[in-house]
Image (cartoon, rainbow, N blue to C red; front, side, top):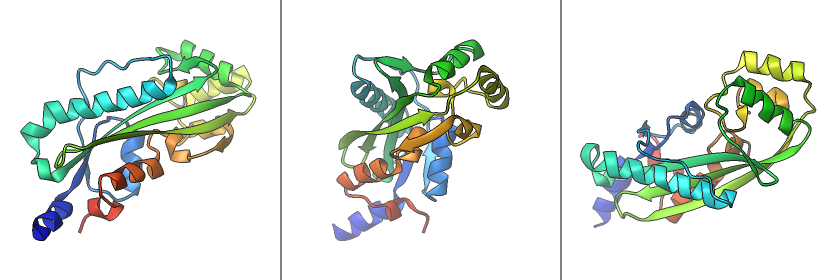
Length: 212
């Protein structure tokens, strides 16, 4: 039994249930063994509570990958599936992925000089035990006061169609930010400490997912 448990941990990899290049980069920086399987058939819901929203959506994404891919492509003993969902939220308003640069400009102008919340839901499914854990992280972000010309310049420099709130703090979008209170990586979509905490609830450590 002890040998089986040891072998299980040696073989573990993370399945990132996301196509986000920012989340991919964060896991690469942590030097973790992971593969990407994008969720399919998931309709992201917007609920009254932003916390319920991100937890619901992160769970749906992780479950989608487990249901549609894991059983066919990976042995159950090898995988931990991680789903994430990030929203930008301020005073009852969600700032999602902009449909075009016009809406992106409107979002950034509305956030200019103000503080908003970057909220990420995290769900981790252990395909060995089938145990599922979820949590969330909140980071307060204050923007600089932005001139319209600065917003237009930013949108010329960075594609934002796939970015909640129309900015990427890990990219050129750091020019927009005056200060943050909380986890930097959360704003980029993957709160590292919260993720590691949830792995710990499943009985795993960071080194269980690193190449030998």
